[in-house]
Image (cartoon, rainbow, N blue to C red; front, side, top):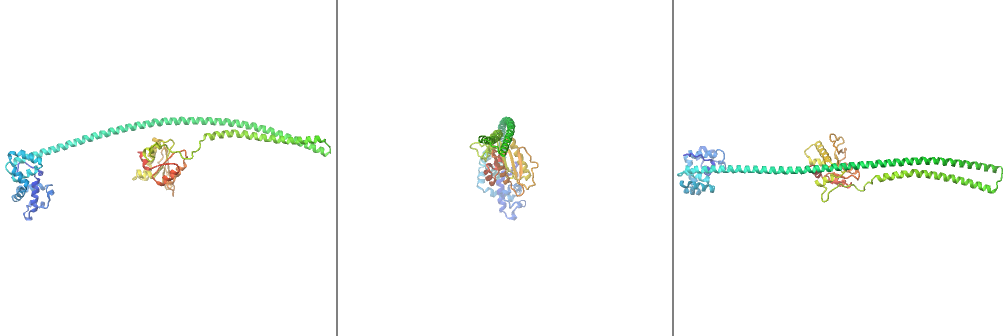
Length: 457
């Protein structure tokens, strides 16, 4: 007997499982030929693929197998209780009660197997209830999917609003920094122009003083020449006087004692006068030349600032760590700061899968962008074999160095720090312990490669 109501396999699952138990307990010779390939299946295997339908078909066509299955199935206490309670007049209530208990499939299997009065009506009610449950589950699933879609849309909108607000905030910050940078640049230009005018006026003053000194020197040289001529004339007069005195002594002309002493005193006075005139002339010339030079040297020495004893440190806000994204960016905004980067120490952390050439190019682009954004100058040092050159790595505000054969980039980094004047604040970017130790001895502030990469981002 077949029913006009087609039941889905899931509603007959208890009966199919009982048929599987019976099938596995049969001797091989008693197994229906249509089910021999299913004898080794467990309960889970019998509920997949075409197996359920094959079992039901055999139950309908093989009376012997059906009787054994139904006999064992009806012996189950829950099945017997359900069949005892069955009354077609209360079929609707019984189906609702079975659905509430979750025994809808057990009721359908009992009605299909025992086939009591009104069983087909009851199977129709079970099938209708099952279809209603399926529709409700489908509708609930659709509602849940719609709710998830709405939630996802709301979340996407919230994220978009947050991203827009963050972008607007970032735009305002960039515009503010650009305005500040323009004002600072104008201030630097005005200061440089004022310094240039001061230097020009100082040079003009020194030139005027030098002209005055040259004129004074020329006058002094003229006086010296005249005094030297007078000294020569006096010496010539003295020589003539001596010759005359000698001639008189040769002729044995005896002068009075008073005249001889007067002549001797006159000769000594003439020699003293000549020596005094010569000393005064030389001293006057030396003082005239040295005075303008001393004034000029004093002004030059005053204009040139003294070199600091210790290296200037970059600006760092209070409470902010130097080796952090915020601290590193604050230091790199310091006017005149120079960043010395341990090249491959940074690139191998940022782009480990890229080639060496790609790593160098990416770091150069990032440092050039950093120069544009913060105004800092950079020097990056890579390990090289002496043949590698900075081809294709020319960027504004960036110097690229390669170590020679037998040298290491670590040594070049420290040498670059030592080469820079102490008035230049220096930040070294490297995670190498040796570089950190020796760069700090040279007065540099050292940040890790991770901190520099965070500033890039």
